[in-house]
Amino acid sequence: MASIESGNLARPSDGLLPSEAELSQRYSVSRATVREALSRLEQRGVIIRRHGVGTFLNSQRPIIESGLERLESLDTLAHRMDLQTDMDELQTQERPASATEAKQLQISEDGTVLSVSRVIRIGDKRVAFLVDITPLEFLGKQDLSDGFSGSVLDVILQRGSLVLSHSLTDIATENASDAVSKKLNIPLGEPLLKLTALLFSVDGRVVDYSHSYFVPGFFRFHVVRRIDPCDT
Image (cartoon, rainbow, N blue to C red; front, side, top):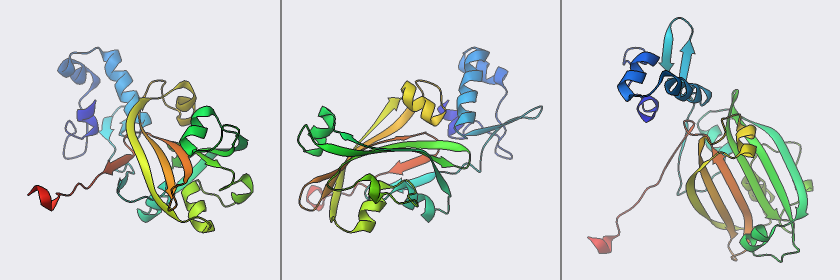
């Protein structure tokens, strides 16, 4: 329910939302449908249910907001906003690249890559699932120290052996697969924001191929679009 998430239905004084019965009548849907929608919003931290009192919009929900013009890690963004992030379920593996990975990374089909997947939490909420694939010539398991906090980008920058140029990022929505829904503790098919990116060095090599799944409600991305003087 977009109107709930946006706060349009909440009582201005305290954020109280209409009852399930009122929402059911307003949107002409069953109580079961309303209950399921509210359950999903609660899992995403959008609302808070207080037994015997009511359902309230969560005004304290942490939101990571950023422009997409500047390439920064999730960890860097969170720290700049004074949010504490934690990493769960880190999995690293050196393995042969899949056909798709080899094509995207511009390496031979028998090339070897480092796969790094992890879940990012804010408090007790799982808010993102990140997967990075990078050729072993650029990064290996031994390069991820005990202090690795979840950002492959930051590790590459800190090592200083590569000069990075830019990232080409595709932005889409995708329903959570069985594997991703289990990682994020969300219902199967829950809509997620997905960023698929290629990270390039200044000499045109693809350094990293990544998939980032973000739980809506915890992130707000924007893009600054400037007017070309030639068009005025």
